[in-house]
Length: 276
Image 1: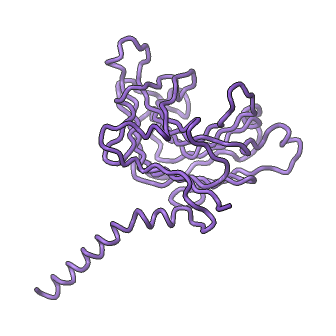
Image 2: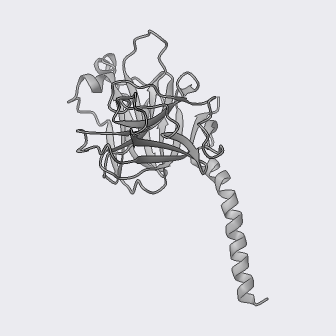
Image 3: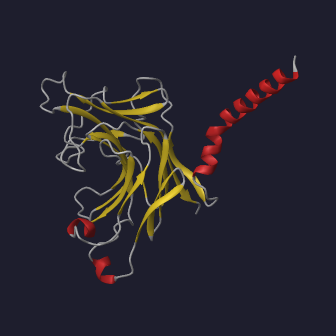
């Protein structure tokens, strides 16, 4: 065997070893802090056509918000393919009894898994069609009938044709006071059609957002007692996870196309918390 051929084969062998080691390396490096351990994850490695793991996820119900007004339990809008979770928004051409113009896919871990504080990472990609509106986010795990000040952490959202990721913290105070003057929303220019890892670090004092490990924004709990009483910070309770593909119209300069298929793929999602 020629020396050059041996070198090439050795290089391929090294690449193969690195390739197999990559998932393990990602698990170790992802949290980027020895204090954190993996406490929840889904790699979506079920057979093609499967529904998401029912011990972790349920379908979101339809309601009146922009993101869930056309949510459907159709297997055409949520399924596993190639080790990825696929969430879609499709024209409604088959559900004749359903008046929704489109059928959209959404899952949540409500009543199955929720957490308070930690790091969450999700690897995903989407398209950049007008009206595209996918998200990975956290909602409050509220006991039935209990009224609580509102809280929502948008790990990442994408809007329409913009090649950027958006990251927002919503509290009762920011909703009640649109001109609150606090920095609670951030945008990061990036090609969302490519695979990227979006994340948060959530503590009793702040929520920080990352894209591929780079910090892109932070929302802090303020010391001002008046603002605290007005619920400027509502992130000291359990939150569950939501993954969805929706369509938007009339917000963020978006115009939906009800004849188009929208699709977002989630490769994996992982939650880390500090060791007690």
